[in-house]
Amino acid sequence: MESLVKYIVTSLVDQPDQVNVTQVPGEEESVIELRVAPKDLGKVIGKNGRIAKSLRTVLQAAGTKQGKNFSLEIVD
Image (cartoon, rainbow, N blue to C red; front, side):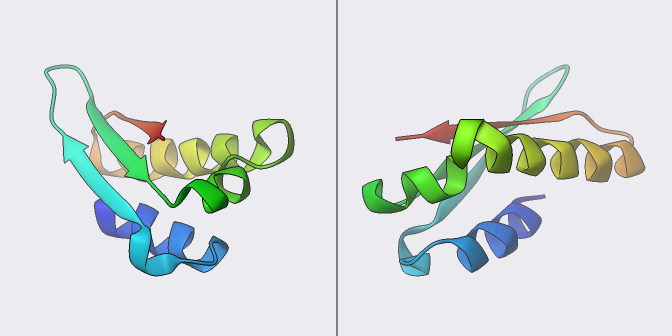
């Protein structure tokens, strides 16, 4: 899942070398933490959070295919 999120986000931002994705496993669900450069934060969140919501939807769909639950946290 980390590679999927990293691939999508690096396509969106201006500084792809500062994209950092880590997975924190949990009992019920795993949390994917996303860190980007401060200037790229708006591009990842999007207008009214649309891009962040889309990223979460893709992550949820891919997780369902694997039989796991994932959530995305955008850390600044």
